[in-house]
Image (cartoon, helix red, strand yellow):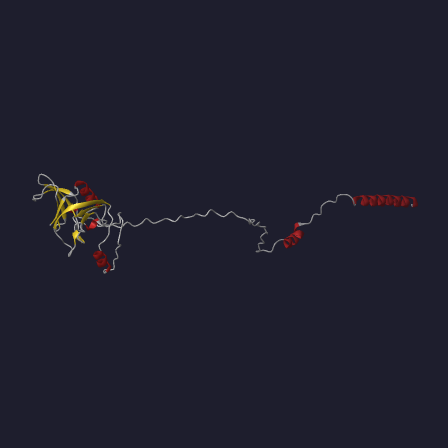
Length: 245
């Protein structure tokens, strides 16, 4: 009996020693995962989640574009100053009846004679075979009419103008001051050509106001369009007879 009990104690001691050694070795061994029943883990897992109905957006860093210290300026459109076209003054046109034309002429004057009709404002250059070349003219306004026969004593191209003293005083009384001398040119009221009549101050001359042709507008001179007085200038000579009627 005693022998059997001792044998049992020896076996227990051996098992205990083996278990102790096994436990010591298991401390450094991989442990199996701990399995928790879903019934036990569900309440704890829910507590780790987000509160219902609250959405927490994640923070995203937005990188701001770097501002350039020196940015090229955009091309500026430059609008050039546009000069408005100058307004052209519309001049009245003369009646076509006063334009040069060949007409029948039955007067007693010889061919080559100039006849000026101050009532109808026509100048006739008498030609052969009962013909005449007719031009429209401007004649003396009321108070400056005259009639008579003279010879052409001089012919000038783009003549100078020296207004008579009486004309200067007369116009000054109206508030219009005339120069004592004006060189020939397009601004000169005598126009492109002048035919001087006898020893008088009267002339057949051009004008810088062609729309006045056909009226009683002058201080006694006979005015013509520039192109017409140039044409007449080429057709007559010094010594030509001029009759003003």
